[in-house]
Length: 247
Image (tube, rainbow, N blue to C red):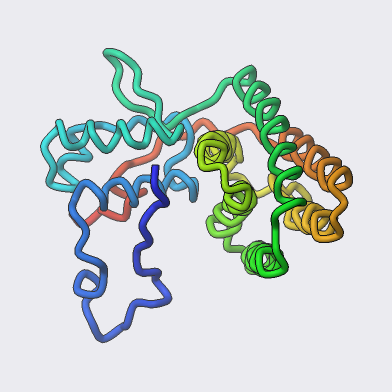
């Protein structure tokens, strides 16, 4: 799937102009996809949440067949599970699936290290370092949703440098799905995807130390897997999570 379109951020919204007049005029299906994608990645809709077709249709003024089309796109991204006769749920990977996903990520991201060490330019590394700084700033400012997003995006940006889009698509699905394992509960000293570890990976790559980069990435993914926390058992309201309470 192509990269997700960007909506206007809250910081960019002028106070003297109604918000709805400032945002891009997106088709309802595309807007639904973006908003649910963001809500999942930012953990406003946690793993296991049921996505009710009727409610989503009312929120976005869409017929059920259009709602199903959007849910199908989210399922292709690995963020939603479609269960026969039960409906759509935010993906909730089992412990075994989580183990399998991290095992596969180890293999794919080792390949990424090999290719990036050979192909990346100074400009590429500058871009990645700026991303890590934004990740660090988001964490220090307590902006957990942005921190989680940037932490996941770092791995995708690395994969893009390989030039292998099939690899990028496979890794994007795995990264998205493993991101769902991060608990919404703050836990002191536990960082599900550490910016410091990201920096060690980049240092090794920029020094053309392919083996060192592979070692740092393997260690990083091991730590990510160990730091996945138990998700809270909690029911969420779709309208509230999608900021549609007044709809």
